[in-house]
Image 1: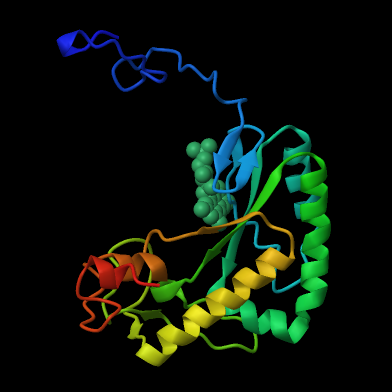
Image 2: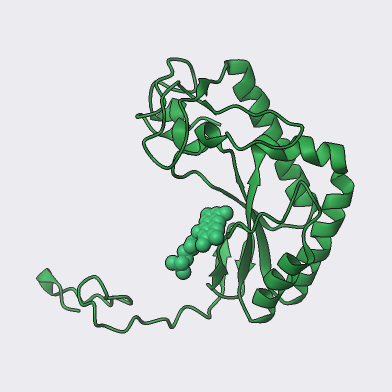
Length: 220
Ligand SMILES: Cc1cc2nc3c(=O)[nH]c(=O)nc-3n(C[C@H](O)[C@H](O)[C@H](O)COP(=O)(O)O)c2cc1C
């Protein structure tokens, strides 16, 4: 493609300029380095929540489903959302080691196919209103403002102590994920979940170190 000034630039995907153009996927099957990890190709199976993992042992049909994607040649298999709010308590009561052992079998099998495995984590924040038997969670957020995205209630403002506690929980959950053999963690920070609510100036009106400006809103 010739640009002003005579500089020749090659555009691999031209669908914005020309919707009928066929995208050039020639890098799709080449390795991709992310930090210290290298994916064998750039095909990612995204996180899709089947409500059948963690808390309870991972369901056999989910294991087969994910493994089939690895056997088909996918470079990275993501496992869907692991709730920070709900996860640690059910896990502790039901046996962290048992869950980690089950998940390790899956990550081992994915690795044996040459694929990487990732786990997605989130916190429901203002949408934290679905009852879990025996456990009570209330909608929470950086400020008592209902996120304009997705469903959700007016959340209770988290105290500084609760934020610190959540950060500790985050570290704990990540250590479980690492022990289970996952190669990466993806943070789900969209449509009104807690991380999204902290990041946005529309829902984060805090005046302490977790608000005020971009630095505060992105602090972790
Ligand atoms: C049933 C279902 C559950 C999903 N769960 C998640 C999820 O847990 N986390 C996430 O980030 N995206 C989730 N998604 C979004 C998918 O990852 C999304 O559809 C995909 O990235 C878009 O791919 P597509 O354009 O090929 O449909 C879900 C989608 C569906 C249909």
